[in-house]
Image 1 (spheres, rainbow over the protein chains, first blue to last red):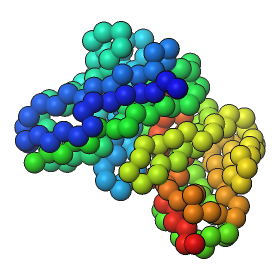
Image 2 (image 1 turned 90 degrees about the vertical axis):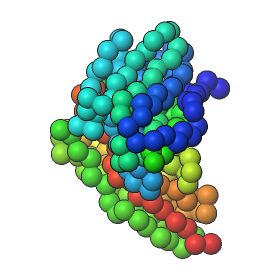
Image 3 (image 1 turned 135 degrees about the vertical axis):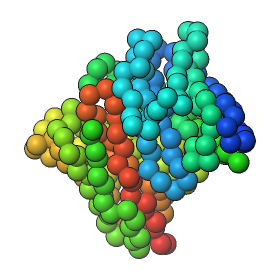
Length: 116
Length: 109
């Protein structure tokens, strides 16, 4: 069964360092997402991406964050200068649906980011 | 922006009891989805509701979408220990899928 894969599974970094989290969405999917989940809390929307551009972003997704689809398979989230409060599980998701009915989101296993 | 509220935050039941979690959106939704997240795991899709007033069943789980497409509920009949986890609703507005805070269900055998 096709799945969304994420790397790394866990990254520890120093405050102020740049971090890149990588995702390989399911190959025929059109919409890609990043969510984050601080331990024990809700799943928070960061950004959605469609047709090689950001479709929607939340108030959390400030200038420190960027996303890119550098080739036909990878979808990356970059945090330019990490802060302590960026420590969380970051989930990538993809879906095959169309605008306003994106269909089932398939989530990756997540990348746990720890900022020291 | 769109907000999705979900209650209760926690629910602890005895095995065999029923369980319900409720979601409300500040705006009309194009559709609503439900996900289950086991401890230490990632959200896994359960179902999507699209039509006003829609009701769908999956074995012991019943999902409802309100007439105004602003609220939804998930009801589990006769809970089992395998139902343990956090249940999230996720409402779709424009181009994003916003999750509720989740209801963490624990089941005592």
